[in-house]
Amino acid sequence: MQIFNFSQPVNFMRLKWPALLLSVLLLIGSAASMFSQGINWGLDFTGGTVIEVGLSETADLTAMRQMLAGAGYPDAVIQLFGSSKDVLIRIPLRPDLEQAKVGQAVLQALTGELAEPVSLRRVEFVGPSVGEELKQDGGMAMLVALLGILLYVAVRFEWRLSVGAVLALGHDVILTLGLFSVLQLEFDLTVLAAILALIGYSINDTIVVFDRLRESFRKLRDATVDETINHAITSTLNRTVITSLTTVLVLLVLFFMGGALIHGFATALLFGIAIGTYSSVYVASAIAEVLGISREDMLPPPEQDDAEISELP
Image (cartoon, rainbow, N blue to C red; front, side):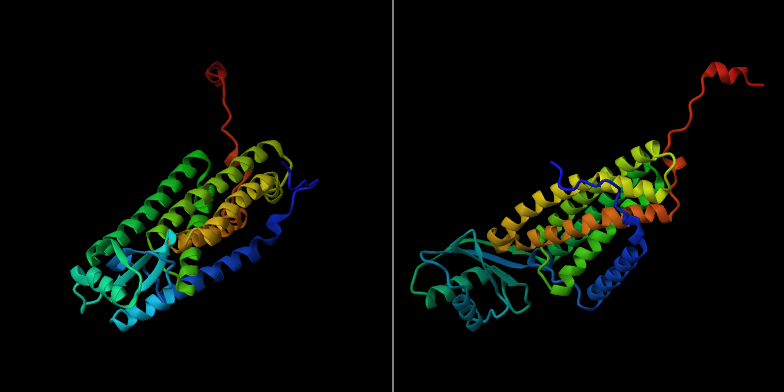
């Protein structure tokens, strides 16, 4: 299936310096937001109590928030869980609360105000030490993934491409974290899973471009480095667009119909796919060119016959 049919390669590298400048400004803005506002960590990382309750009729979330605020839980986060009759309540960790009794206290507050019966499905408590461990493990997982990709690309291709690929991945992760910091969206384990998935998605797109770049360096022997990179990106553009659109369609369904629990997951991947496609074109390839990638770096070393070598004086 051909979406684009170009007679000549698109000159992507003509905009490499404006694109790199834009990326630097976005990275600075993301870092500034994370430093000033921080990240809105979810209960998975900060600790607290998660309570799932079931109702016999459709839940009125606004009324339930008012009930819990009157009962002493103004910071409670209330979301639908699965159906309109299943509700998930998150109570952040507070020093004035006895966490072991929070579940029953919330159930009593709702039962006393609601005319319909309320059933307690489950109560889970996440301590602050567990949340801190999750932060460390999540950060370590991202670091190990980036280091593994750095090594893989360096062995398979060339170190300049390896640096470009890892910097592009770091670019994608930081901008996604910056989005959650600027909008103060809740960052929970599903968002962490989305960022790890984004690393895999983005590097796959970059590897496809690099594979075609290596082939183009071998075929277009009279072309400049700019022209070769433009040819490689243009020749993979149809594949990139089709893959991205297919993934975006699924994520849009999850975003609008998947419920509040995976809203952050879908948001992170929707934004990350757009940034990842951009970084595969402009960040990874442009950085490799700035570092001085050349045709000689990508061609295999010449092989000489042993007999010819032995006859040399």
